[in-house]
Length: 459
Image (cartoon, rainbow, N blue to C red; front, top):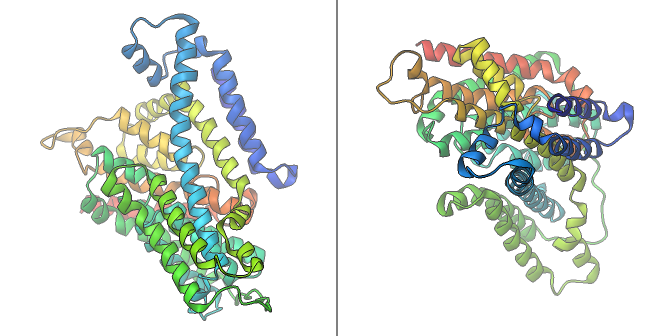
């Protein structure tokens, strides 16, 4: 049963990768593996947990010394693990729903037109550099997921051709992941390390900024020599009705961006999960919209009210997130990821190789449980530690390099990061297409940034 869970995950992952040839939506495949992994886990729970690979089960037994038999197993999986992981997954899903809705509200009010009108160039190379640097710094302020959602919405206003837009959206994913890696609030794994006390805000910026920048710039430099031509702007349909005024466009753009920027501030001030800040921002934007449009004709209200805009939100992307994160949660709970972490530690035994391997694995398996596994495997050592243990002190090389590899490694596959999954869902990017055209660029950037960090460490 333990092995069967891995087989189901691999088969489901293959179905997601072959979405277009199979003509089966990836959300359907994700929901199936997200459910079946837990079904197999539950049916074979006793044999799986007795293998001793699950840290969660060990912690449960330590907290409930009288627990034994099928009842204890049922309580552990159904009432403890599923509820725990559903809570974590729900935070991501509500965050995603809130961010997507805010972006759609701004888009419907033509707020992004303010930005797209400022970007005059149609040269592919210039546009790619402008958007990549915009993404890189935005993702450090917001986070890579929100930034990707915003930039994909912008791309729809700037590029008409689907394949060209796929390419730019993919490079946005690469830039967003690179930008999120060096900021304490830019990526969920960096947030984990920051909150966990493994790194401090200033040191993570100092140590990881340059490698992250190189991770983005190297692929851009390669494309500067290979990419030719201009993009075609989409034709703007002239409507007889002016749905929004210039003032309303600016207002909703400012409110939308401010609402997104408010999320990390909300988290810092309240210590509550980020999705609550996102939902608060959406609620405020919703109220403003209701008040502004209440006296307008019904035709305009039906187009601009948030209730109508919610119908445009990409629900399959949310369901895809639910399925894939549920499957990874089952593997984490059963102990597969813990076993993988131990294997890396025993076979590699070098902090740089371990972090590089975790980065590569994060393109296949969600980087959150991988980083969580690393945090659980390696306790923070005393500042006076020497030798190998010195790598694991606060702001030690292991933690800094882990922030870089786990944050940027996911770019190697479209499914390897929250930003990639969001872009894949919003633009329907094909897995195989990304693998052929973008993965090698992401790998070159990843290794280049890693080399820069290694040189920095040596100096």
